[in-house]
Length: 546
Image (cartoon, rainbow, N blue to C red; front, side, top):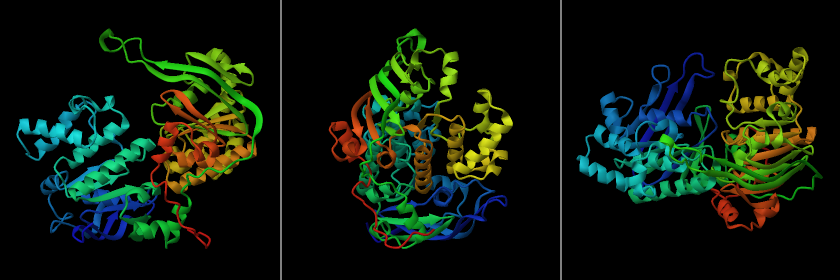
């Protein structure tokens, strides 16, 4: 890292519309970015970290959200004063950006090579032959196999990690001096996340770029950051070297965030009641194979292969693995959202895999699911009360009694009963996930299936939801299948662990034993890939107060 300042934000304030919960998305923010450094900006959703980067890129949704004060100095000019035409040359050319969700940032109906070519054409760079050769080199530089084949592919044909690598190639196409990465690894598996972090760090060192890396994952910060900025409700509350902020945080908010980070160390938990609530035997599920495009033979995917496990009364079994390992398919087969091809799912001694949909209806009330996305899983046109009571009413409950119980459940999950009369869009992500939990509990289930239920949440909200799930499980004596790719979360909440790879369970046992003495090479690879695994966090002597 050099002492050369390549980007300077001075007293920046970005206003919000009058109906917003505060006046400014970003308020009086000042910081510098140096050549050759990685600056991490951390904070919860709504802290203003992404708004600050969007202001740099000229991507604010004007006129409703706009800069009202300050300067953004880059290459001796204030980016807030340049014309749209000048900003277009800078954006992508001198300042590149990697967006959080590649599937929304990439055009689904354009081949990868055409989207990369568009970057060069829009900036008037290179001849057609030179562009073609450069595209192959770019895809190879970001570690994509068979760059010619990848280039001719559409985004939907690529994995999440491959799409993110394409996004990185696009951001670096014109060799910018500044790269902004906005939560580029949040939804990725731990091994893919490690690859992307290593790639960003490697390319940054080779090219001497300054990188602004926006994240809420302190493991990522510990892995790559040179300096750290912590934002809360639009303001910077702490900044300093990664060593200082991670190990000696000064501000109560930073301390609160770091205290909420789950640690990788799994502790031994007392044995649960050895009564199986559900037993899965030789579960098989295959997708595809019947026909592909134009009548050709389709691709066959063995989502589960001879999967066997039991979940005991009152315990949480963690199902961990990468995307495509089959863990979500297992959860969906248990509740019969998908039908398994063969095998047994014994619930209360009955094989529910052999039941008709009509016979499955009364069983399903005892097996409930908490979905990954609290935004997509709640009907935006219905009030919260109607969403929660829908299941019980279908199963014969009186609506007035179900609504009374719904209010009690909202209190149980930490929300005011007045929320019954409001709509989903009026709540934060963490609050919506609590509503999803209340909806699942309204059916008085014996088994909860939590499918990546906290993966999209901020670290502090995640900690609250995990504590809530653990508390409810103990109070109501529920069993839970917890599907996750976050090994830190699994270490915190799970009694036992099943590690899945390519549809098979490769390791199975008590969480502390699996984490402290993994037997399978794949389990060891997952644990080794956890970002910031060597960082243990500070030992705070005083009580934390926000």
